[in-house]
Amino acid sequence: MLRDDAKCGFVKPNEATYVSVLSSCANLDERGVLCMGKQIHGYIGRNEARVTVFIGTALIDFYGKVGCLSNAIKVYNQMVVKKSCTWNAIISSLANNGREEQALDTFKKMKEEGWCPNEVTFVAVLTACARAKLVEIGLELFQSMAGEFGLVPLMEHYGCVVDLLARAGLLREASEFTRRMPFEPDASVLGALLGACKIHGTKILFIELIF
Image (cartoon, rainbow, N blue to C red):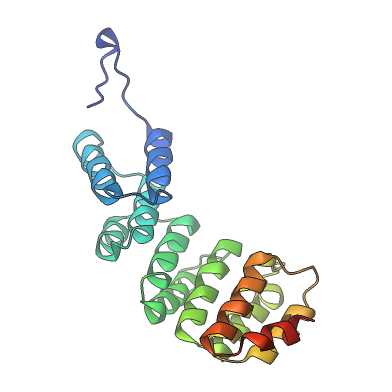
């Protein structure tokens, strides 16, 4: 265990250390990563007077990505100070763990409390719409990016909309949307279309849609 004891060669980790380590754990696909993250969380609790905004956000992101949503929500609820990144982390955690409606409710609360959503926020809420097949709401949110918030949609946002339409079985609409994109679709966009064609039992349609 690390200690703030220079004589023994130990250096106490700081905020950046915790955030980096938790981020690494969140992106690992290995057995035991949840236990590892919990140990880091426990160490923070024992050795830090308070959980900063960025440490708390990193914990929410970690727990959300490893599927431990209850812990992510607990950390979020315990945080007195929040920033846009904190809201993004909890919305994404909810969206990716089967709580799509709650993710959209949290997005609404974020705006009500005066926080301005950014590009990361919209990836999270569009993902929630795609997974819940909320086509109308998702399209409205996509349009609001530029119209209401002055944000230029990126490839990732277009990919979310394609996924939204494709999951709902609106394959031709998804294809038309892809053709109207201001740039060439990447592998994730084409993958969303192909995956939907497989789900809906029409692999040949994928070739027709693209070509």
